[in-house]
Amino acid sequence: MNFNLYKYILGISDNSLILGQRMGALTGHGPSLETDIACTNISLDLFGQVRSYYQYAAKIADDGRTEDDIAMLRKEREYLNVLLVEQPDTDFAFTMARQFLFDVYHLLFLTELQKNKDLTLSAIATKSMKEVSYHQRFSSDWIKRLGDGTEESHLKMQDAIDTLWTYTDELFHQTEADKIMVSEGIGVDVTKLKDNYYQKVNNVLEEATLKIPESKYFQKGGKEGIHTEHMGYLLSDLQYMQRTYPNMEW
Image 1: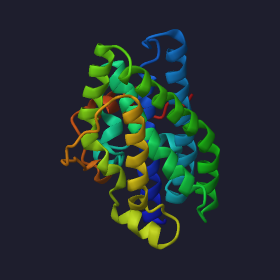
Image 2 (image 1 turned 180 degrees about the vertical axis):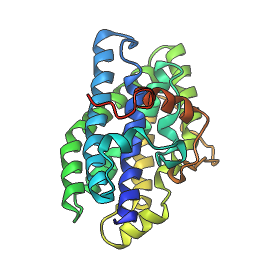
Image 3 (image 1 turned 30 degrees about the vertical axis):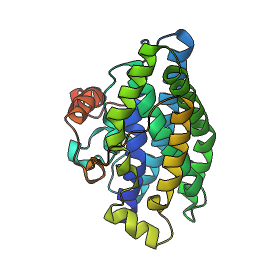
């Protein structure tokens, strides 16, 4: 088993799993039918990507676990997603801000991952590009629409950006597995995406008449399995059926 490649794949896929769970929880609660369906489809896109990653991870692990086992039966400290994606929904502005701040990173990351010499990771990235391009357009449009909308929508979006900003720097933090995979020519060096990321984010915020947060304090830990209090509640929902009815299959 290539343990570092296994952990590297989890570091990629867990982001989409947890964000997909957050977006899926909004089904039936969108501000309009069209937007509700769009958010549900984004969730389905993310889960589709996750399944491909976990199938590959299960093949690498070769220990009898399936993609479902990897997705549903790990403990909280074994999930390696960034803190950003596990933040709870407080209002629609917050949901779109979280989505946007991840989407910009996700598209930059997949653009590099599709060049990978690992043909499986390259294929997953290439297949996901069209979906994530749409995700970024969708969330960017809502940032502008709410930021440059009414006084209330502007204040809510500014508050969401200010609150979530502290979680953005972790996107570019490298774990030991990341560094090893980069040295082997498989991993994406996320440190090289940072400047481009903040430039793209800042451009959209300026167009949305939003202030770019000046805070230099950032939180991290998710990539090492150290999560916020929200993660446990999310997993209790995500894992309920599998924990209640062990070995259940659809």
